[in-house]
Image (cartoon, rainbow, N blue to C red; front, side, top):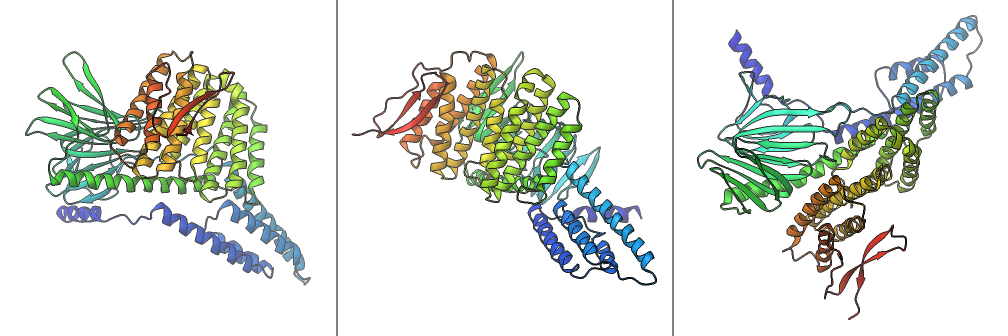
Length: 587
């Protein structure tokens, strides 16, 4: 009997969970709402207690949106008011029942609508889980001494050990949207899966490669709050921003190799008294062989390695697009009622009410921050739908709400932390959004808000450099997708910010220096990536040189060039505004 139960258990585990992707669920929801609206209007062309009763029964088992609920209430109450019940011997009883039913409908629908509106801010998302996204061949999970046959969407936990067989492949998607792809004959142990319950941007993933090979793609870490780390007995590879890297542990030759294919990865090699730290940039591999370290350009020696790299790079591009689509749909769901909806005013009234009834000053400012974040979410949804006019108005209100808390942020450390956490969590929604996306204007608005709330000139410089660092990374991706115009424009904007910071005399802090080094490293990654790319123009390479020299603290970052285009740096008389622009040279 026990043997049969075990067989049944394994069979059930192999069955795939019947799930629908987020895009399909969204389409089903839209179709359902549309059908409900059409049915609701049609069913109330003639009004009676019987019709009202049918409407109540029809909607008792569904959960329509706030808009549909409000429309239902309006139609039902209009029907009751326009068609009074005829007098009869039972008119008194009928009239009483009509009043009771009307009161009940008003109470239920009003309470439901208010519940939706009052739950509108702040938005809290359910935590994501770490699961198998795809499995091929033999893959097992060792958990608490028991071997479990892996199955798709199986939730993984700390201390789990994943083992792939001779023909086994596994793709793990972590809760922070990072991905690991395990090759055959690989063993991986999960040490840490951490996400802060309040600051969703604060994440830590740590795994140990005890045997084999794994490709890692990190797409969604923001503002130095998150980290993704792979360790072996001799190497630690860690990143806090976007990156793609391959790591191989060869027990036969007793060596570990880390090859970086996108951006950069920090590699640490423990020694007797200290750790040797090296930042490995895109296009280079770092090998540790018998305690000797060697860094060289990536060389793919055989067809199997070439295939592994090509497949994973293709999967990386497809996965980024998938994540962006998921975040786009999630933004629309989170935004709720939009300005084009007639009941948007009720949503705004609810926000005003919450501010009026809150007496604590700090809590009231937190509500203002929540409202601002909600406006940013709405703007993202409107931009995705192509409604730039309403999006512009909403972004203006976002900026206005941020101005309202500027002075309070300066005085309250508690509010500073709240703003920082809220902005970092929202930045994750735009981590994969590139300048050619409709949603990019919302991402830029968030950057400007961070800059406006900086507490000092020193912090403003640091935020400016972080924004420039992000833009350089975006330009790198755009060049990879052959979108030269968008890439050049983004890079030019980053260089403007870099030159402006470099020319300021008061940026002498340790934090500022660290951010300078980080941005310089990112610029050099881009420079190496486009150096031999014939499709990249001389003008672009010239802009990169300007940014690099400015970050190296060269006194005059203007580069003389014999090309037909040079960069000029113009500065206003007050010294506050610096611009970098391309100018044609008359030959």
